[in-house]
Length: 366
Image (cartoon, rainbow, N blue to C red; front, side, top):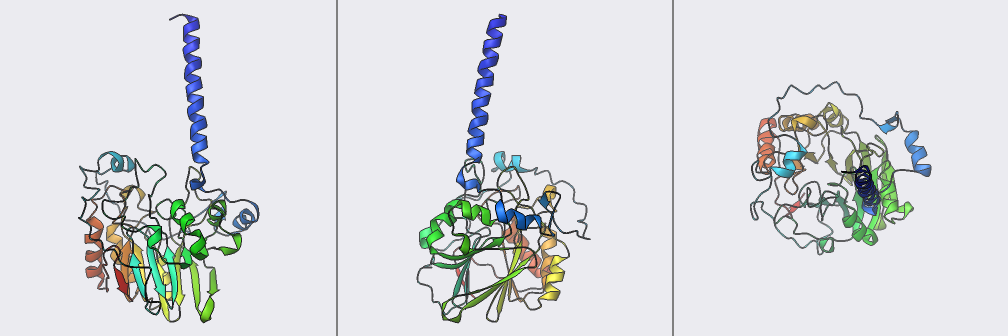
């Protein structure tokens, strides 16, 4: 090749690389990625005791996970390319589902509906709370990762009643779906989310006055018509956040929801530590606790609860009843799809607790 030909090829390659970089940059600026906090919201974040050295930080923990050898399943790469070999995705019909009429629910009934993974509809005291709804995909690149399991995507936004409170635990794609929340925008009363997550909602044209952002150990009491009232307490968990390549600029959390005399705890995502015992001691007699159970891997055991820790968390909390989530709809790790269903039953038996195991879409009376 002549020197001129080499330089021409080099220039062509650089041009293609530049075009690819510009395309990638444009992709990351799509509305679905949200927006990093700015203005007064950023000022509040910078003043948070949980934000240090340019990022939100998990609270120190005395708990040290036991040594667990690598199980050979690998990480995200295997979740992408070894789905069949590792039984990561069920066949159509293997996960039981039921389509319930949610538009005509009895307002006087306290109930809960699981949509798979970490999405829930909770009705308490005549108030409707929708938690981490993902009715589309759990990834920005659905052709690689985050498509619903066959037969589990039976609910659409149109099947959901008007919502008093939208509750978001953190901004990961499998908990905060832009397409779902924007379609629901006109039918949501208030949005309650961890500090910093409100920036995404403002990017998606939610009214700032509809947003309630909480730091750990902060609470909000919201009042509605006919004297209905809900208290939401933002509590720690051990996880991380981010929708792109910048992590931990918004907070991750668990929530204690109180309406009238009932209290429901949503554990959110997070590795096991002593917070479960602390929450159980501070708030004895929680009526229902919903814990993470799925998408675990020894490689990220600090940020997701491992199967042998689920019974510990149940015992520590001391709730009257339990449900588990973070499984049953999406493949984001490398355990067999049905393993969490067995894990929750084993943990309940070991800890001696009352476990509720609804089908996806089933109305469970509280």
